[in-house]
Length: 288
Length: 327
Image (tube, rainbow over all chains, first blue to last red):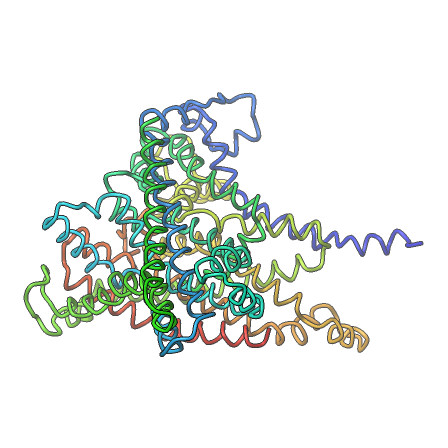
C-alpha cells in the first residue's frame, strides 16, 4: 500500500498548480469576452468585466447585445455568408486535390515526379504574391463579359480552392501512398473503373487525411479576412462585420463581444467535438 | 433570413454539383477513346482541373506580380528598379522591416518557449489532467485573428480620463500605482508592437505545445530510465536527455512560427490599422494596394516578402520530409 507521502508526490501538486495558473492566464482573455457579451451597455461601461465576476448580482445580465448585432448588424446573414463561402471552399479543393493525388499515387504517366515537385514548389508561395493579378483579371472578366466572379461567392471559392491545392495534394498523396496497392489492383482485375475505385475505395480509405485537411481548411476560410474582404465584399462575412463593429466600439463593447462570440461558436464546436482530427489538421496545415 | 439560407444552400449545392460533373464528364470523355489512349491520358484528365487552377490562379499571377513590381502605380508603365529603390530609401519602410525583424526575434522564441514549458509540464500530470490543460491552451488556435483582436481589445482598451476603468491592463497598472496608458499608441521601444506580438504568442503556443508534446512522448523510455538510474535530477533529464532528442521538432515548430509571423497582417489591421509605427510587410502590402492604389509598390513589397519566405519554406518542407522519412 502506498503511503500518503508517495501518493502526494505522484499527484504532482506543484506541477498541477503551476499548470492551473498558466491555463488561467491563457483563458482570461476569452472569459472576459464571454462575460462582456452578456452584460448591458451601462454595466459594460461602468465597470471592468472582472468586477462582474466578483459581484455577479450587482449587474444587469442580458441578451440585448446579441439581439442588437443580429437585428441591426445582420450577424445572422453574415453567419450564413461565411458558411456559404466556407463549405465549397473546403469541399472543392478536397475533391480536386483528391483526384490529383489519386493520379499521382496510383497511375503511371510521363513526368510524374516532376509535376509533383512543381506542386510542392508552389507551396512556398505566400498568398499575397498572386493576389493583385488575380483581382485585376477577375475585374477584367467582369468588364468584358459581365460575369461577376469578383464581389461574390464564386470568386472566393476559386481563390481559396487554388491556394489550398498545393498543400492538399501534398498531404493527400502522402497519405494515399500508405494505402494497400494490391487492393486497388484487385479491384482493377475485377473490372472496376478508375472512377469507381476512386469513389468506392480510395476516398473511404482516405477519410482520416481528408477529415484532417477539411477541418484545417474550413477553419482557415472561416477565420480568413483578406480573401473575403476582396472577393465577397457584397456579402459581408463574420470577420468583415466584426472588424467594422470593432471600429464602432463607441456604442458599446458588449456588441463587439457578442458579435465575436457568434463568430467563435462554429470553431469552438469543431474544436471540442473533433479534437483529434482538428489537432492533426492544424499541425499538417501549418506550412500554409 | 429565409432567402439568405435558401440562396446559400442553393449556391453550395450548385457549386459542388458542377465540380463533380466536371470530373464525371472528363472521365466519360476519356472513356470514349481506345484502351491504349485511355491508359495514357486518364491521369492527365484527373489532373486537369488542379493544373488549370494552379496555373491560372497561382503560377501566372506570381510571375505577373514580379513584373508589376517594375511598373508604376497603375501597372502600365515601366519604371525599372524605382519601386525597390523607393522602398529601401524610405525611412518608413525601413521601420517596417525593423518591425518584422522584432516580430521574428520575439514571437517564435516565446511561442516555442511556452510550448516547451507546457508540453513538458503536462507530460508529468497523468492523462486526464494533461488532456484538459492541453485543450484549454490549444483552444485559441481555433480563433480568427480578428476575433483575437476583439478579445485582446478588452485587455488593452483605454478609456477617457474620468470614466470607470474597463481595460484589464490599465486596471492592473493602476492597482500597482501606475498611470493608465493608451497602449496601442505607445510606440516608444515599439511597445505597442510587442503588445500585438503577445496576442500571437497566445494564439500559437497551443500549436507549439501539441507538436513538442508528441515529440516528448516519442522519446524512448529506456534513455530516461538509464539517466534516472544514474541519479540524474528531473531538470537534468530534461536538458540532457529529452531536449536533444526532440530538438528536430522544436526547430520545425520554430521555423513554422517564423513563416506565420512574416505574413502577419490581420492583427495589425484590426488593432492599430498600421498606425503608430506598428506596420509590417503583410500589412503594408494591403495599405499600398487597397488604400493607396500603388500597384507597383505593393507588388515590390510582396516580392520582398516572398523572397524572405521562400528559403524558410524550403527548409521547412525539407525538415517535414526528413521527419516523415524517419517515421
